[in-house]
Length: 291
Image (cartoon, rainbow, N blue to C red; front, side, top):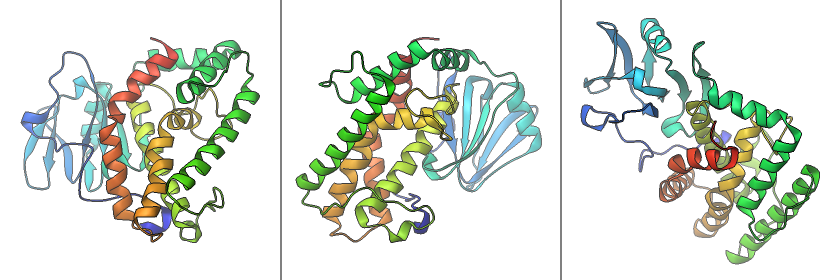
């Protein structure tokens, strides 16, 4: 729905349709697959996916970290039991995982990455080192050596404000500052509406990826006191191109009239172009190190 800033579009897709010949062929566990408009159930103790056209695909859940269930999906109790036994997490998401609703994790899932993340987050020295690395990742010309977390956040606020102003000049768009009132999406100007919608989509994609990789969205290094600090930490790595530049360029192209379908297609194009889903795992390991 447009009123809540959600992005959805039936055009270009981030995830391919799951069929027998498109199942991942890997020796190790695969991070996640996305399913929509169909049913997961059990047949001879194996999980099978039946899509809206009646096609049947048996899923190798023992080789999957996470299954993302999109719109129009249903799952039986028995399927959940088998997936739990295989340590396969289930996430309930919007179309193309551009909204995130809930997650079901297994009691026996591997916690190696989570323990690694928790140890780093709880260590003030390590946490600051990672916060500096995250800031340097985004602004390589800035000197972050010796900076405290508070100083980094102050620098970030000034730098992001500068980026907004630079984009406004670049695309000849009037800009009065970032403004969003929860529950009143339609009252924002076009640029702010695009920022809100694309930010929400970016947070949803990252949340799904973080859960699929065995990390926690709740243990951050820069952000704190919010529901998803690690998601916000990671989102800042990509937001300038995926959200801020997108918002100002589309405001110019749409002549100030908000079009959620155009926003959805443009956002997907950029996500695909930078291979976001492939970059997130590599960037987490680069920043946190191997568990």
